[in-house]
Length: 414
Image 1 (cartoon, helix red, strand yellow):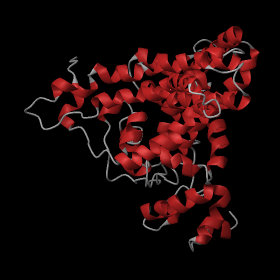
Image 2 (cartoon, rainbow, N blue to C red):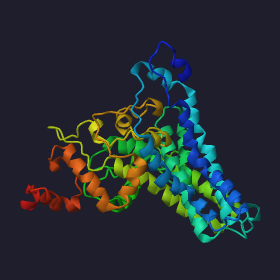
Image 3 (tube, rainbow, N blue to C red):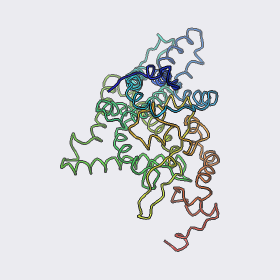
Image 4 (cartoon, helix red, strand yellow):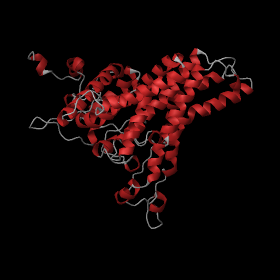
């Protein structure tokens, strides 16, 4: 296979070159942010700013809830797709793979360094009297949780690939958030059932994120176990064995946590839990907005239609694209799951979010605001026919009544 770089691809006789090529390295900002924050804490404390510097341990949420949305607003949409004739050369350019591979060592370095900071009782070298306070430790845990959450997205990119090495890296990237079963459920469950009521990771119209979160977490875990059990039964292998990919992925997390607790002590346990919960919750809020209210219709044979660009919410804001490896080009990802992030296209036919994912996750936390922004967009997407949406069953009758539709099944007592 050719390993030509995008720079060589962008010959003078071709009209296109990847202007984002070196911007992809900015994807390493989240896993290195803790080290930047530490340097700023040290510098601030040297200047006598001890009352201000603890805020810097919250650098993770400041990054995803403040900085990236502001940059999205300032920089605007991406607006550029790679031409079809360059797909193969871009796919074979290993530079893009290395950008994702590099995330992992920084991810684990951040976690290990955070464990040291949580356990240390003498941080005088940072200008801190004693150790970190509880509020700073919680902020640090959430910041590391941001790294773990974006690490799940990195695992998502790697886990879809055919290269065994990348699939192994995917399991390691999932380990800090203790979400190894995502490796099975996302590839073999979500991609099959997406935008249907049977998919726990597809949010329903009228369903708040806070109701979706436990449904998706528990439903995805159950689905992963069922899928893996069925696979092993077909192969004639025992479920409780080293052949079980769910168990092997969890084993990496158990080993990682055991080593960290053994080295740094049990005092770090609450913060490991906080970072893990925040990490997988960050994944789930992205799941929530990616398919909210969208539904694949059933054919005359009673099967769901093929997944199309109409079944994923897209956004093409440049900054979030860079930080999430084109995850916002979600329709093309579902159409071509093994396609590498650098070749994913923005599709105008896809339903579009009003802002980047980084902005929309904040809206998702506030259900009334989310409904005000998104419900009419779902309705518009279906040309005013709300019955074509994936509606929350518990609220179906109320939602249909709101839009002047009679629920015939309810009226007939079915």
